[in-house]
Amino acid sequence: MIVIKFHHLVAFGVALIVSFFATPIARRLAVNLGAVNVPNDSRRVHKKPMPLMGGLAIIAGFIIALIYSFSTKNFKVFTEYLIRPKTIGLFFGTLIILVLGGVDDVRPVRARIKLPLQILAAVIVVSTGTSITAISKPFQDGVAVHPSMMFVLEDIIAYIVSVVWIVGVTNAINLIDGLDGLAAGVSGIATLSLYIVAVIRGQDDIAILAACLVGAILGFLPYNFNPAKIFMGDTGSTTLGFILAILSIEGTMKSVTALALAIPILVLGLPIF
Image 1 (cartoon, rainbow, N blue to C red):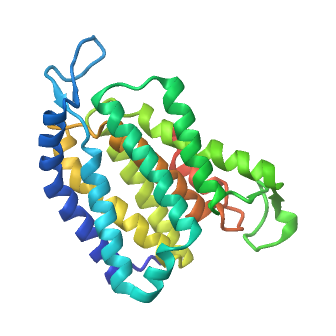
Image 2 (spheres, rainbow, N blue to C red; image 1 turned 180 degrees about the vertical axis):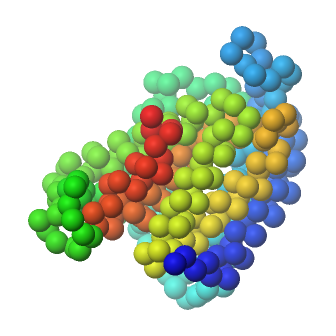
């Protein structure tokens, strides 16, 4: 049975409200900065220039809801969490992806520059403690924690697999961002699935993170449905993919159960495919 806690609903609501009201601001900012997608080839669905950088509204909703939720839950633990190496790594890694996406929305950045910076962001995150340390063996009976059911990864292998996963999912979400509401909709469904898994497993902090992200995405979607008024751009799609990759590691792949590998791959199946 899935029990949705009140503070999860509050996190969701704060993120949704902030994102919804921040999206028009992001739209004006995109126009002023020249972050506009011009339909100059036949594969573009929209017929007129479309502002990008809608992802700024999603990230604003996510961060504000996150700070509010964790600070009101336990302020002392929250302040201690902020200075942990893992948190600092997550902050700087996400900041690199966000800034890179913003620059790319204003003036397209070549892949040979983007990819190394994405790898750098992933390396920072993995180096500070967010990594895949074991993968469950498929077709095992039960979900009991037992060494015989797990492929424990060597440090170097775990490091490489973690970086590849984060960079891969980051670009997977970016690559499906081509139709009105598609990337945001798929990301929202994936995040909601991760939220349900976190609630079932009693991972309250992960559930709050997922609730904040779902709310922020849904606050943006009314402006992104056909006919779209704004696109999330690389600012949103790459940052969203980056956060989703990390969330899937923290919430599912690090759990030593028989579903450790299956859940994130199923949840993120469409963009991975």
